[in-house]
Image 1 (cartoon, rainbow over the protein chains, first blue to last red):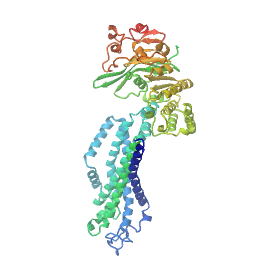
Image 2: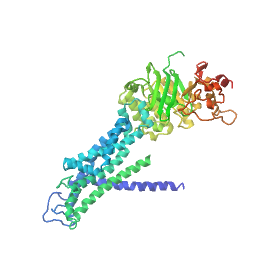
Image 3: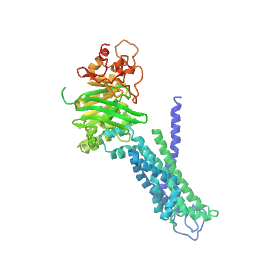
Image 4: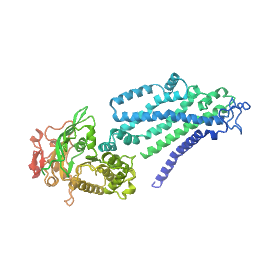
Length: 280
Length: 326
């Protein structure tokens, strides 16, 4: 028994770590593709070759070509940049604004908490996707309007998580100790409590990025997000939908891109959550 | 002994409005802390000793209601504006807690936490703060302080954490240290070291200490005077030597009898029968009467006041003579 315990623990650690490593691997590859698409992609994603329309995968075009003779591999690679941008720009405002609001609401409570509760009710009652589509439809299609729409709603979820965490942290002894040392409330909230409450935010951020890539692709597919001829996975699939039975490669590869990105960020999020769970 | 006390608490009350009625955690207590003395605050769990300490620095949160007066060098701590209160906290009065693990911020290094206090309350520049942080850790007895100063709290052992907490609390050289059961979470050997450290720092920094504890051994070892609390009231107060030699309150006597004494003939420990009363419905007279073997009919009458029973020795026991001559 005494010998068995460490082995079991080691095995469990390995089991927990493997998905995280795979997830990190995927994310790193995607990041490299997104940062240096020009030097990795074999062709210009917009250059059309009318002598090679809808060619199936071959040595010169590993992912084939589309109906305008553009190289699908190059377009999928360039789309990585757009889709990772979507993941970041959709979350950057929510994470900053939502965490700040959540920290303040969690710390001060009272009327602030009541008002915030109503805002949460209003946003949660309507399905996220429907709400985003409604806002984008009102503002007009395009990536910028999509960022605005997602940011308007997305911060609420970060704030909700932060509020709950701060409510726990503010009752801790170290919070009392900081108060006893005569520190200002702003210092207590943002220097002492917030770093101790940030873990679930980071975990949620990973999941949120995966969801935002899916959302960006969905809106791109519906024509509300990125606009053609911009290479974006959702747009690529939309372009390919009329050729689904004749040119499967046009839709399959961007689809794999979406799946990989979603999987990568989810695995990283899960892995981080596991690490923090074990620390506690 | 006629010197003006450093802190003078009068009629301190802490009440909580609950749905079952008004709960009185601290029931109008008076006590003084003198320059350079260690004052013990003893009592069972729920006797209001920690609440007393927390109310002095206004840590009691709603729905808690604090009233009364706490005169600190001419100012009433309980009425001070929040901005001035912040200058008192940490700079003039510091506090240390029972659980050193939870009272240290886990994501900041010990050095950072000390320097933060120095930055807030002293004029030292960055380089001086850095040096002072190491000096302070060294001073509270952390071995090779220089290499440990950038460690995180979880890299310290329990006793070292308590030392680190003391170093943080004392960085700004406060005049009064509030110690809330600082040794309860520690091993007995470490307890002893921490108490000796506190006593040494007390004389070096010339500060006063209020030591809250339920451990009479700790009090015997470290305190000059003792305040015994029961159900939110002061039942007996006096110099530790006199109080231990001849307790004048039935409750204090019970407490002393429930502690084993080295060298004495081995016999079963006497415990105090019954439970402390509910703070929602305190008995009309002496709160201890229902558990007291000395109780007489008069104990159930009006609440007995503190009377002087010896030099600086006060007891609220109606039968203090019989307790003394038991």
